[in-house]
Image: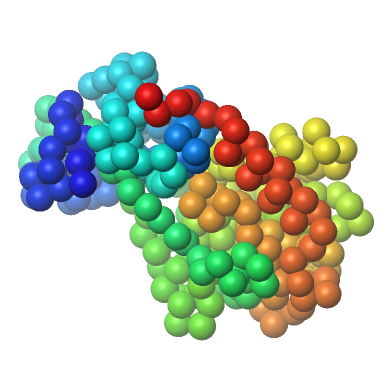
Length: 289
């Protein structure tokens, strides 16, 4: 495997960063998870834009232009013969001291990995997920804004630990008000009487690109889509619940805290949106040439 590391492609064994890198020491950095389908990188421009927005929000200077970063992603895919897969794009603060001061880090590190990923087994896409609400609440939006896709993912990792310990592969995270925020790594949607609702970023949800694309496709298909705060009750009584994410794509939730959602099977609207999303993902994007 070839890894892009700060300007050049290197063998996996040579893709190393300093133990003094603040990305390692403090989770100081930003990242993107990106998908490639049929020889195209899906939503690449949007992912690059969000990466630079996240970096700006934490005062991190990326030592590449957006155009150079876009080309680096394509080149890394080409070097690994990746036509379908997952791309992890990471920008760390870079090598510094053992202190917190980020301004002592002279240059950010840029890492691009093009490989494969399967977040959930195929049978869960066919039959749906069971999830539980965890005690770990989502970071307060004014502590770490959910629009920043930060390397400091401990909040989500702790939630994932609770989910796994409860026998589930995914969970529901609430915010400091007890409202629905998101899953440990995905956005949450509920469908009731044909209306699709998802929490806004102000509730602690990442403004996911898959989330945005699904909302766009749903509106084009004639569905009413709302961004509004939700309680767990709204999920319990929903006709359908589903999750979205770059790695997860679209997956149905059939059980929340031992409450069966709808008839306990992936719903019609969820299946329709999944079909529309896959059709779009496999026909659009930046060519890997």
